[in-house]
Image (cartoon, rainbow, N blue to C red):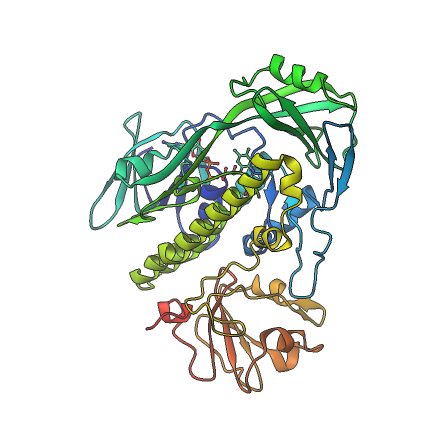
Length: 480
Ligand SMILES: Cc1cc2nc3c(=O)[nH]c(=O)nc-3n(C[C@H](O)[C@H](O)[C@H](O)COP(=O)(O)OP(=O)(O)OC[C@H]3O[C@@H](n4cnc5c(N)ncnc54)[C@H](O)[C@@H]3O)c2cc1C
């Protein structure tokens, strides 16, 4: 398979598949290399945050994922003293005109990657299984991925999305500083069971010699399985059938495990790379940052890395300035740092107080997890919507801004007769489209203002002067 493509993506997890999809849908030649013989079968990143659903929409997968997922599954928590508590997950959060998704969605990770693979194939992208990358060589013109069987894949750029144990990261010598907490372990499994309703996420507090633990059983939508997570009070817990049956036999109400499929142990690693880029190679997803699963951020952060990087690589391959690629690390590294802090805070709550500690998290922490406030703005204190902020949705007659954004990478919202054409962008004439005034109320333009929205759904620029040249860093709000 010696081949020559625009971009090699190493790793067919959610991060790699989104990076590849973003490139393939823009007509770039991309290959995805994955060492595993088959797609990952287990449950892991089963919580998709609202912002991820938004940024995946232009790729054409959000509607498909939503059709297979479930929103707002309430918790049912069983105390060791026999008490049962019901908790809505985010009762205060409902969709609004500027925010079509307000709650996290549950969908098994294997289903998400299945949908992403199908979409990639529709754009002509391919995943090579049994393709283990062991080396990366780069020069001025390109980069070569070297496989363990001697095959070589040459490309202009390479994305290392090969997970927490990333080979790409290791062979590049990129530091991955942080901590491993061997004492914080979980057993994860995909099971089928009888005895619980599928309208709740069931969480059982457990007590044992090693302190508090919990058993989490979350029904997976559109399939018969459940995601099992066991934080055992026993520090030497094993990921095997006997262990799971013994724990489940002890809980009330009675639950019968019918089948135990994929089963594994997970231990807490909190680490981040010291750089996201080495020349023509970019690190993304778990290859760049790992942390606690509390709060369901890992897959989401990786997918948003991939969206941020994907359009920039496509633009540079199309002739945009190389400096555009420097903004990948500048924008995504602070996000990864914030996610590590956030998931660490939630982990402390769970370790101190069990599943209830998570459900009792303050509203501000719950909101942060939705990732809707995530911004790349460089001026944290400036009032109103600024470059770098999320571009909110707005109903526009019988359509919406998000639906219209599917038609083009770059969108200009033009207010008060400022709808002159802009090369490389679609211009939406707010005077004609904004029949109910949602856009104006949300974006609060000054007279004659134009607002530029980037391909990843963040504001790029706003003003009454000339719109910056599309694809330059000025169009992202950075000094030109
Ligand atoms: C218990 C648990 C619960 C979680 N819950 C959530 C959640 O609710 N929400 C959320 O957002 N995240 C969650 N996560 C995190 C989420 O699962 C990960 O962040 C996500 O899988 C990372 O995706 P990725 O594509 O970056 O890496 P991975 O999914 O790890 O994919 C990496 C791919 O690279 C391949 N690969 C590895 N080495 C090589 C090589 N040398 N050559 C070629 N291919 C290679 C692997 O086969 C694999 O397919 C959870 C994680 C755990 C453990």
